[in-house]
Image 1 (cartoon, rainbow, N blue to C red):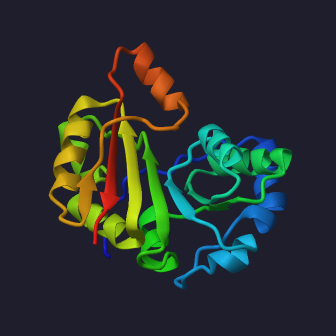
Image 2: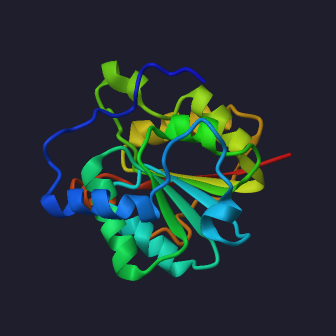
Length: 218
C-alpha cells in the first residue's frame, strides 16, 4: 500500500544519552529489524500465543503496563521516534519482559510487509497524532486504506482498539471504521486499557476521551 503522506514528523536532537545507549545496546536484543518479509512470531517469542500490535507506543509506559498485566499474550510495539524506542527498551530490560518486542519503523510498512494476514488478536491505536488543523487532516493515520489494512491483518474476532481525546477525530474514526464491512463495532468502553500520558494531558485540557472498539468479522 502506497502512502506518501506520513502521519508523523520525525523530531531530531531530543534523544538522551541513556535512551541512545539503550537503542545501541538493547535493540539487538529486544528490537526487530524492519524487512519486507513476514515475521515468525513463534520463533520471535519462543512460543505460540496471541499476538497484539501497538501502533505508536510513544515513551512506552502504557505499553509496558499492558504487557506486564498480560503475560500470556505477545506484543509488538511500533514506534518511529528514537526517545520513545530507547525508553521502551530500557523498560523491557528493567522488567525482564519476554513478551514484548519493538520495531522502529513506519507502522503502515510494518503491517503491510511484516504481519501476516488474519494473524493478529488485536491492534492498539492509542492517541495517535490528531493533526487538529483541518488542512492537516490528510496526515491522520486513520483513513479508509488504513481501516482496510487493519481489517486484513486481524484474525476473525480480533479487536481493533483506538482511543483519542479529540472529538472530531473520534467522529472521523467512527465514520472510517464504520464504513468498512469487515469491522463490526463493539460496545463502547476502554476495557483494561490503562491511562496514557497523552490521555492525562487531554483530560487536563478538558477533552473528552473516546475509546472505539471493533471486531473483525468473517
